[in-house]
Image (cartoon, rainbow, N blue to C red; front, side, top):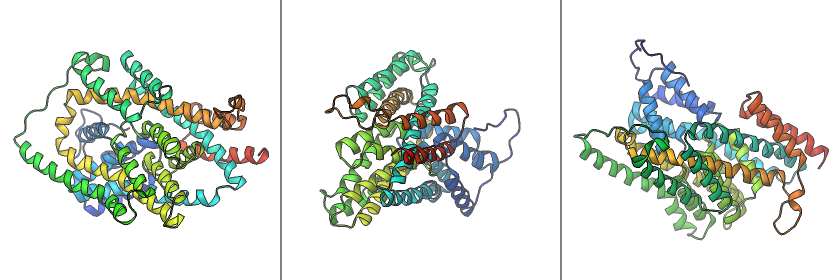
Length: 442
Protein backbone atom coordinates (compact mmCIF):
# COMPACT_ATOMS: atom_id res chain seq x y z
CA UNK A 1 0.00 0.00 0.00
CA UNK A 2 1.34 3.45 -0.86
CA UNK A 3 1.87 5.93 1.93
CA UNK A 4 2.24 9.67 1.90
CA UNK A 5 5.59 10.97 3.09
CA UNK A 6 5.48 12.99 6.27
CA UNK A 7 6.81 16.51 6.24
CA UNK A 8 5.41 17.25 2.79
CA UNK A 9 2.48 19.60 2.42
CA UNK A 10 -0.43 17.65 0.97
CA UNK A 11 -2.61 19.26 -1.67
CA UNK A 12 -6.18 20.10 -0.72
CA UNK A 13 -8.69 17.32 -0.95
CA UNK A 14 -10.94 17.30 -4.01
CA UNK A 15 -14.65 16.61 -3.81
CA UNK A 16 -15.88 14.51 -6.72
CA UNK A 17 -19.26 14.79 -8.36
CA UNK A 18 -21.60 11.86 -7.85
CA UNK A 19 -21.01 10.86 -11.47
CA UNK A 20 -17.26 10.94 -10.90
CA UNK A 21 -17.66 8.70 -7.86
CA UNK A 22 -19.75 6.24 -9.87
CA UNK A 23 -17.21 6.11 -12.70
CA UNK A 24 -14.31 5.58 -10.28
CA UNK A 25 -15.96 2.69 -8.45
CA UNK A 26 -17.18 1.11 -11.68
CA UNK A 27 -13.50 0.96 -12.66
CA UNK A 28 -12.47 -0.37 -9.24
CA UNK A 29 -15.24 -2.97 -9.32
CA UNK A 30 -13.96 -4.48 -12.57
CA UNK A 31 -10.29 -4.39 -11.50
CA UNK A 32 -10.61 -5.59 -7.90
CA UNK A 33 -8.79 -8.91 -8.19
CA UNK A 34 -6.26 -10.25 -5.72
CA UNK A 35 -8.24 -10.61 -2.50
CA UNK A 36 -8.70 -7.98 0.24
CA UNK A 37 -5.07 -6.83 0.31
CA UNK A 38 -4.99 -6.15 -3.42
CA UNK A 39 -8.45 -4.57 -3.41
CA UNK A 40 -7.63 -2.23 -0.53
CA UNK A 41 -4.33 -1.26 -2.19
CA UNK A 42 -6.23 -0.53 -5.42
CA UNK A 43 -8.70 1.75 -3.61
CA UNK A 44 -5.87 3.49 -1.79
CA UNK A 45 -4.08 4.23 -5.05
CA UNK A 46 -7.23 5.37 -6.86
CA UNK A 47 -8.94 7.33 -4.06
CA UNK A 48 -6.12 8.58 -1.81
CA UNK A 49 -3.00 8.84 -3.98
CA UNK A 50 -4.29 9.74 -7.44
CA UNK A 51 -7.64 11.50 -6.94
CA UNK A 52 -7.04 12.94 -3.43
CA UNK A 53 -10.68 12.41 -2.44
CA UNK A 54 -9.92 11.05 1.05
CA UNK A 55 -6.95 11.82 3.27
CA UNK A 56 -4.56 9.09 4.35
CA UNK A 57 -5.43 9.17 8.05
CA UNK A 58 -9.17 8.98 7.45
CA UNK A 59 -8.68 6.07 5.04
CA UNK A 60 -6.66 4.10 7.59
CA UNK A 61 -9.10 4.84 10.43
CA UNK A 62 -11.97 3.64 8.27
CA UNK A 63 -10.01 0.49 7.43
CA UNK A 64 -9.59 -0.16 11.15
CA UNK A 65 -13.34 0.23 11.61
CA UNK A 66 -14.01 -2.27 8.80
CA UNK A 67 -11.72 -4.80 10.49
CA UNK A 68 -13.96 -4.56 13.57
CA UNK A 69 -17.09 -5.48 11.61
CA UNK A 70 -18.28 -8.82 10.23
CA UNK A 71 -18.20 -9.21 6.48
CA UNK A 72 -15.76 -8.37 3.66
CA UNK A 73 -13.68 -5.42 4.81
CA UNK A 74 -12.78 -4.24 1.29
CA UNK A 75 -16.43 -3.92 0.26
CA UNK A 76 -17.23 -2.14 3.52
CA UNK A 77 -14.33 0.25 2.97
CA UNK A 78 -15.68 1.05 -0.50
CA UNK A 79 -19.10 1.74 1.07
CA UNK A 80 -17.53 4.00 3.68
CA UNK A 81 -15.65 6.01 1.03
CA UNK A 82 -18.88 6.55 -0.91
CA UNK A 83 -20.72 7.48 2.29
CA UNK A 84 -18.04 9.98 3.26
CA UNK A 85 -18.12 11.68 -0.14
CA UNK A 86 -21.85 11.59 -1.01
CA UNK A 87 -23.75 10.28 1.98
CA UNK A 88 -26.02 7.25 1.76
CA UNK A 89 -26.44 7.35 -2.01
CA UNK A 90 -22.65 7.51 -2.39
CA UNK A 91 -22.23 4.58 -0.06
CA UNK A 92 -24.82 2.56 -1.97
CA UNK A 93 -23.20 3.38 -5.32
CA UNK A 94 -19.65 2.55 -4.23
CA UNK A 95 -20.61 -0.57 -2.30
CA UNK A 96 -22.83 -1.98 -5.05
CA UNK A 97 -20.34 -1.26 -7.83
CA UNK A 98 -17.69 -3.09 -5.84
CA UNK A 99 -19.91 -6.20 -5.72
CA UNK A 100 -22.01 -6.27 -8.90
CA UNK A 101 -19.29 -7.04 -11.49
CA UNK A 102 -18.06 -10.06 -9.53
CA UNK A 103 -21.62 -11.21 -8.84
CA UNK A 104 -22.47 -11.17 -12.56
CA UNK A 105 -19.29 -13.05 -13.48
CA UNK A 106 -19.84 -15.59 -10.69
CA UNK A 107 -23.42 -16.25 -11.82
CA UNK A 108 -22.19 -16.85 -15.36
CA UNK A 109 -19.51 -19.24 -14.12
CA UNK A 110 -22.06 -21.08 -11.97
CA UNK A 111 -24.32 -21.56 -15.00
CA UNK A 112 -21.37 -22.84 -17.01
CA UNK A 113 -20.40 -25.15 -14.14
CA UNK A 114 -23.73 -27.00 -14.05
CA UNK A 115 -23.99 -27.05 -17.85
CA UNK A 116 -20.57 -28.70 -18.31
CA UNK A 117 -20.63 -30.97 -15.25
CA UNK A 118 -19.98 -34.62 -16.10
CA UNK A 119 -17.83 -33.91 -19.15
CA UNK A 120 -14.37 -35.52 -19.03
CA UNK A 121 -12.47 -32.39 -19.99
CA UNK A 122 -14.38 -30.35 -17.42
CA UNK A 123 -13.48 -32.72 -14.58
CA UNK A 124 -9.83 -32.60 -15.67
CA UNK A 125 -9.87 -28.80 -15.76
CA UNK A 126 -11.19 -28.58 -12.22
CA UNK A 127 -8.70 -31.16 -10.99
CA UNK A 128 -6.10 -28.45 -11.54
CA UNK A 129 -8.23 -25.72 -9.98
CA UNK A 130 -8.87 -27.77 -6.81
CA UNK A 131 -5.16 -28.53 -6.46
CA UNK A 132 -4.30 -24.84 -6.91
CA UNK A 133 -6.79 -23.93 -4.18
CA UNK A 134 -4.67 -25.90 -1.69
CA UNK A 135 -1.71 -23.62 -2.33
CA UNK A 136 -3.90 -20.50 -2.31
CA UNK A 137 -5.34 -21.39 1.12
CA UNK A 138 -1.81 -22.16 2.37
CA UNK A 139 -0.69 -18.72 1.17
CA UNK A 140 -3.62 -17.09 3.00
CA UNK A 141 -2.68 -19.03 6.14
CA UNK A 142 0.92 -17.83 5.92
CA UNK A 143 -0.02 -14.19 5.32
CA UNK A 144 -2.63 -13.98 8.06
CA UNK A 145 -0.47 -15.91 10.52
CA UNK A 146 2.57 -13.71 9.89
CA UNK A 147 0.52 -10.60 10.62
CA UNK A 148 -1.67 -11.89 13.45
CA UNK A 149 0.50 -14.13 15.66
CA UNK A 150 2.85 -11.67 17.31
CA UNK A 151 2.75 -13.13 20.83
CA UNK A 152 2.78 -16.59 22.41
CA UNK A 153 -0.73 -16.05 23.71
CA UNK A 154 -2.02 -15.40 20.19
CA UNK A 155 -0.21 -18.48 18.95
CA UNK A 156 -1.91 -20.52 21.69
CA UNK A 157 -5.30 -19.12 20.68
CA UNK A 158 -4.68 -20.12 17.07
CA UNK A 159 -3.67 -23.65 18.10
CA UNK A 160 -6.71 -24.05 20.36
CA UNK A 161 -9.02 -22.85 17.57
CA UNK A 162 -7.46 -25.34 15.16
CA UNK A 163 -7.85 -28.23 17.60
CA UNK A 164 -11.42 -27.25 18.45
CA UNK A 165 -12.44 -27.28 14.79
CA UNK A 166 -10.27 -30.07 13.39
CA UNK A 167 -10.56 -32.58 16.25
CA UNK A 168 -13.55 -31.61 18.39
CA UNK A 169 -15.70 -30.45 15.43
CA UNK A 170 -16.71 -27.36 17.43
CA UNK A 171 -19.13 -24.88 15.80
CA UNK A 172 -17.37 -21.97 14.14
CA UNK A 173 -19.57 -19.25 15.74
CA UNK A 174 -18.80 -20.68 19.20
CA UNK A 175 -15.04 -20.61 18.54
CA UNK A 176 -15.21 -16.97 17.38
CA UNK A 177 -17.44 -15.94 20.30
CA UNK A 178 -15.14 -17.53 22.88
CA UNK A 179 -12.08 -15.93 21.28
CA UNK A 180 -13.78 -12.51 21.39
CA UNK A 181 -14.71 -12.97 25.05
CA UNK A 182 -11.18 -14.03 25.99
CA UNK A 183 -9.70 -11.09 24.07
CA UNK A 184 -12.00 -8.57 25.75
CA UNK A 185 -11.04 -9.86 29.21
CA UNK A 186 -7.31 -10.13 28.50
CA UNK A 187 -7.21 -6.61 27.05
CA UNK A 188 -7.91 -5.31 30.57
CA UNK A 189 -5.75 -7.67 32.60
CA UNK A 190 -2.81 -8.48 30.31
CA UNK A 191 -2.88 -6.23 27.23
CA UNK A 192 0.73 -7.17 26.40
CA UNK A 193 -0.45 -10.75 25.70
CA UNK A 194 -2.34 -9.33 22.73
CA UNK A 195 0.53 -7.09 21.67
CA UNK A 196 -0.93 -3.93 23.24
CA UNK A 197 1.60 -2.64 25.77
CA UNK A 198 -0.26 0.57 26.50
CA UNK A 199 -3.96 0.92 27.22
CA UNK A 200 -5.97 2.56 24.50
CA UNK A 201 -7.21 6.07 25.15
CA UNK A 202 -10.92 6.42 25.69
CA UNK A 203 -13.15 8.42 23.35
CA UNK A 204 -14.19 11.84 24.51
CA UNK A 205 -17.84 12.42 25.19
CA UNK A 206 -19.61 14.06 22.31
CA UNK A 207 -22.45 16.56 22.68
CA UNK A 208 -24.03 14.97 19.60
CA UNK A 209 -24.28 11.51 21.14
CA UNK A 210 -28.05 11.67 21.67
CA UNK A 211 -28.63 12.68 18.06
CA UNK A 212 -26.30 9.92 16.89
CA UNK A 213 -28.22 7.35 18.89
CA UNK A 214 -31.52 8.34 17.29
CA UNK A 215 -30.16 8.33 13.76
CA UNK A 216 -28.34 5.04 14.34
CA UNK A 217 -31.49 3.32 15.60
CA UNK A 218 -33.43 4.60 12.57
CA UNK A 219 -30.68 3.35 10.23
CA UNK A 220 -30.67 -0.08 11.86
CA UNK A 221 -34.46 -0.38 11.58
CA UNK A 222 -34.45 0.56 7.88
CA UNK A 223 -31.64 -1.81 6.95
CA UNK A 224 -32.99 -4.70 8.97
CA UNK A 225 -36.21 -4.32 6.96
CA UNK A 226 -34.22 -4.24 3.70
CA UNK A 227 -32.20 -7.29 4.79
CA UNK A 228 -35.37 -9.23 5.68
CA UNK A 229 -37.54 -8.19 2.70
CA UNK A 230 -36.65 -11.05 0.31
CA UNK A 231 -36.98 -13.57 3.15
CA UNK A 232 -40.51 -12.32 3.82
CA UNK A 233 -41.29 -12.74 0.10
CA UNK A 234 -39.96 -16.31 0.10
CA UNK A 235 -41.97 -17.17 3.22
CA UNK A 236 -45.16 -15.73 1.71
CA UNK A 237 -44.81 -17.44 -1.68
CA UNK A 238 -42.88 -20.69 -1.17
CA UNK A 239 -43.02 -21.21 2.58
CA UNK A 240 -40.34 -21.75 5.20
CA UNK A 241 -39.77 -25.37 4.17
CA UNK A 242 -38.43 -24.44 0.71
CA UNK A 243 -34.72 -24.52 -0.04
CA UNK A 244 -34.74 -20.77 -0.77
CA UNK A 245 -35.72 -20.12 2.83
CA UNK A 246 -32.94 -22.41 4.04
CA UNK A 247 -30.44 -20.65 1.78
CA UNK A 248 -31.48 -17.18 2.98
CA UNK A 249 -31.50 -18.17 6.65
CA UNK A 250 -28.11 -19.88 6.46
CA UNK A 251 -26.30 -17.06 4.68
CA UNK A 252 -27.96 -14.42 6.86
CA UNK A 253 -26.46 -16.17 9.88
CA UNK A 254 -23.14 -16.42 8.07
CA UNK A 255 -23.14 -12.65 7.45
CA UNK A 256 -23.09 -12.03 11.20
CA UNK A 257 -20.12 -14.30 12.01
CA UNK A 258 -17.78 -13.57 9.08
CA UNK A 259 -15.02 -11.98 11.14
CA UNK A 260 -11.52 -12.45 9.81
CA UNK A 261 -12.28 -12.54 6.10
CA UNK A 262 -13.65 -15.08 3.70
CA UNK A 263 -11.10 -17.81 4.42
CA UNK A 264 -12.05 -17.79 8.07
CA UNK A 265 -15.72 -18.51 7.39
CA UNK A 266 -15.15 -20.98 4.56
CA UNK A 267 -14.50 -23.81 7.00
CA UNK A 268 -17.81 -23.24 8.75
CA UNK A 269 -19.67 -22.77 5.48
CA UNK A 270 -18.16 -25.93 4.01
CA UNK A 271 -18.89 -27.92 7.16
CA UNK A 272 -22.56 -26.92 7.10
CA UNK A 273 -23.21 -26.78 3.35
CA UNK A 274 -21.44 -30.09 2.62
CA UNK A 275 -22.03 -32.31 5.63
CA UNK A 276 -24.96 -30.62 7.34
CA UNK A 277 -27.21 -29.48 4.49
CA UNK A 278 -25.88 -31.65 1.66
CA UNK A 279 -25.99 -28.89 -0.94
CA UNK A 280 -22.68 -29.80 -2.61
CA UNK A 281 -19.60 -32.01 -2.27
CA UNK A 282 -16.16 -31.17 -0.90
CA UNK A 283 -14.73 -31.11 -4.42
CA UNK A 284 -17.43 -28.73 -5.59
CA UNK A 285 -16.72 -26.48 -2.62
CA UNK A 286 -13.08 -26.29 -3.73
CA UNK A 287 -14.21 -25.63 -7.30
CA UNK A 288 -16.35 -22.73 -6.09
CA UNK A 289 -13.45 -21.21 -4.21
CA UNK A 290 -11.30 -21.46 -7.33
CA UNK A 291 -13.98 -19.69 -9.36
CA UNK A 292 -14.33 -16.95 -6.73
CA UNK A 293 -10.55 -16.43 -6.74
CA UNK A 294 -10.68 -15.77 -10.49
CA UNK A 295 -13.42 -13.11 -10.38
CA UNK A 296 -13.28 -9.44 -9.33
CA UNK A 297 -14.83 -8.40 -6.03
CA UNK A 298 -14.88 -9.99 -2.57
CA UNK A 299 -13.80 -13.61 -2.22
CA UNK A 300 -16.91 -14.22 -0.11
CA UNK A 301 -18.73 -14.26 -3.48
CA UNK A 302 -18.17 -18.03 -3.28
CA UNK A 303 -21.36 -18.02 -1.20
CA UNK A 304 -23.29 -17.21 -4.37
CA UNK A 305 -21.93 -20.37 -6.03
CA UNK A 306 -23.02 -22.47 -3.04
CA UNK A 307 -26.47 -20.89 -3.00
CA UNK A 308 -26.88 -21.40 -6.75
CA UNK A 309 -26.12 -25.13 -6.50
CA UNK A 310 -28.48 -25.51 -3.54
CA UNK A 311 -31.37 -23.94 -5.46
CA UNK A 312 -30.55 -25.67 -8.75
CA UNK A 313 -30.61 -29.13 -7.16
CA UNK A 314 -33.76 -28.72 -5.08
CA UNK A 315 -35.83 -26.51 -7.34
CA UNK A 316 -39.47 -27.68 -7.08
CA UNK A 317 -41.89 -26.12 -7.78
CA UNK A 318 -39.57 -23.84 -9.79
CA UNK A 319 -37.38 -24.91 -12.71
CA UNK A 320 -33.75 -25.72 -11.79
CA UNK A 321 -32.48 -22.66 -13.63
CA UNK A 322 -35.02 -20.30 -12.03
CA UNK A 323 -34.41 -21.70 -8.55
CA UNK A 324 -30.63 -21.55 -8.99
CA UNK A 325 -30.65 -17.93 -10.15
CA UNK A 326 -33.13 -16.97 -7.39
CA UNK A 327 -30.98 -18.68 -4.75
CA UNK A 328 -27.84 -16.97 -6.08
CA UNK A 329 -29.55 -13.58 -5.94
CA UNK A 330 -30.93 -14.21 -2.47
CA UNK A 331 -27.53 -15.35 -1.23
CA UNK A 332 -25.85 -12.21 -2.56
CA UNK A 333 -28.58 -10.02 -1.02
CA UNK A 334 -28.40 -11.44 2.51
CA UNK A 335 -24.58 -11.56 2.36
CA UNK A 336 -24.03 -7.93 1.41
CA UNK A 337 -27.09 -6.04 2.70
CA UNK A 338 -25.73 -6.37 6.28
CA UNK A 339 -22.48 -4.70 5.14
CA UNK A 340 -24.40 -1.53 4.33
CA UNK A 341 -26.16 -1.77 7.69
CA UNK A 342 -22.85 -2.02 9.58
CA UNK A 343 -21.26 0.92 7.74
CA UNK A 344 -24.21 3.31 7.74
CA UNK A 345 -24.90 2.58 11.43
CA UNK A 346 -21.31 2.46 12.72
CA UNK A 347 -19.40 5.00 10.61
CA UNK A 348 -20.64 8.00 12.66
CA UNK A 349 -19.33 6.24 15.80
CA UNK A 350 -15.91 5.51 14.33
CA UNK A 351 -13.86 7.38 16.94
CA UNK A 352 -15.54 5.57 19.85
CA UNK A 353 -15.20 2.15 18.23
CA UNK A 354 -11.52 2.67 17.50
CA UNK A 355 -10.80 3.59 21.12
CA UNK A 356 -12.80 0.79 22.78
CA UNK A 357 -10.19 -1.27 24.62
CA UNK A 358 -12.35 -4.44 25.02
CA UNK A 359 -13.45 -4.27 21.39
CA UNK A 360 -9.88 -3.97 20.14
CA UNK A 361 -8.86 -6.84 22.40
CA UNK A 362 -11.72 -8.99 21.11
CA UNK A 363 -10.70 -8.22 17.53
CA UNK A 364 -7.05 -9.15 18.20
CA UNK A 365 -8.10 -12.47 19.73
CA UNK A 366 -10.52 -13.20 16.88
CA UNK A 367 -7.77 -12.50 14.34
CA UNK A 368 -5.49 -14.98 16.13
CA UNK A 369 -8.23 -17.62 16.27
CA UNK A 370 -8.88 -17.09 12.56
CA UNK A 371 -5.38 -18.45 11.84
CA UNK A 372 -6.43 -21.72 13.45
CA UNK A 373 -9.69 -21.65 11.48
CA UNK A 374 -7.82 -21.23 8.18
CA UNK A 375 -5.40 -24.02 9.17
CA UNK A 376 -8.36 -26.31 9.79
CA UNK A 377 -9.79 -25.38 6.39
CA UNK A 378 -6.42 -26.06 4.71
CA UNK A 379 -6.17 -29.54 6.26
CA UNK A 380 -9.79 -30.32 5.36
CA UNK A 381 -9.36 -29.29 1.73
CA UNK A 382 -5.98 -31.03 1.38
CA UNK A 383 -7.29 -34.33 2.72
CA UNK A 384 -10.24 -34.46 0.35
CA UNK A 385 -8.38 -33.23 -2.74
CA UNK A 386 -5.28 -35.39 -2.32
CA UNK A 387 -7.18 -38.47 -1.10
CA UNK A 388 -10.48 -38.21 -3.03
CA UNK A 389 -11.40 -41.87 -2.42
CA UNK A 390 -11.15 -41.54 1.36
CA UNK A 391 -14.08 -43.07 3.21
CA UNK A 392 -14.11 -43.79 6.94
CA UNK A 393 -16.09 -46.97 6.25
CA UNK A 394 -13.43 -48.31 3.87
CA UNK A 395 -10.13 -49.27 5.58
CA UNK A 396 -7.11 -48.37 3.52
CA UNK A 397 -8.91 -45.81 1.34
CA UNK A 398 -6.68 -43.07 2.75
CA UNK A 399 -3.69 -44.66 0.96
CA UNK A 400 -5.15 -43.88 -2.49
CA UNK A 401 -3.16 -40.71 -3.07
CA UNK A 402 -3.98 -38.67 -6.20
CA UNK A 403 -0.47 -37.94 -7.46
CA UNK A 404 -1.81 -35.61 -10.18
CA UNK A 405 -3.37 -33.31 -7.59
CA UNK A 406 -0.16 -33.48 -5.54
CA UNK A 407 2.01 -32.47 -8.50
CA UNK A 408 -0.27 -29.57 -9.45
CA UNK A 409 -0.47 -28.38 -5.84
CA UNK A 410 3.35 -28.35 -5.77
CA UNK A 411 3.43 -26.33 -9.01
CA UNK A 412 0.92 -23.86 -7.55
CA UNK A 413 2.99 -23.53 -4.36
CA UNK A 414 6.12 -22.74 -6.38
CA UNK A 415 4.26 -20.16 -8.47
CA UNK A 416 2.82 -18.39 -5.41
CA UNK A 417 5.65 -18.68 -2.88
CA UNK A 418 8.82 -18.98 -4.95
CA UNK A 419 8.05 -16.95 -8.06
CA UNK A 420 5.45 -14.59 -6.48
CA UNK A 421 2.92 -15.01 -9.28
CA UNK A 422 -0.64 -13.80 -8.92
CA UNK A 423 -3.66 -15.95 -8.15
CA UNK A 424 -5.38 -15.60 -11.59
CA UNK A 425 -2.21 -16.71 -13.43
CA UNK A 426 -1.65 -19.56 -10.98
CA UNK A 427 -5.24 -20.77 -11.37
CA UNK A 428 -5.01 -20.60 -15.16
CA UNK A 429 -1.74 -22.54 -15.39
CA UNK A 430 -2.92 -25.16 -12.90
CA UNK A 431 -6.21 -25.57 -14.77
CA UNK A 432 -4.23 -26.29 -17.94
CA UNK A 433 -2.01 -28.74 -16.04
CA UNK A 434 -5.10 -30.48 -14.70
CA UNK A 435 -6.51 -30.68 -18.22
CA UNK A 436 -3.29 -32.27 -19.51
CA UNK A 437 -2.84 -34.75 -16.67
CA UNK A 438 -6.54 -35.53 -16.30
CA UNK A 439 -7.05 -36.37 -19.96
CA UNK A 440 -3.78 -38.30 -20.15
CA UNK A 441 -4.75 -40.54 -17.23
CA UNK A 442 -8.52 -40.46 -16.47
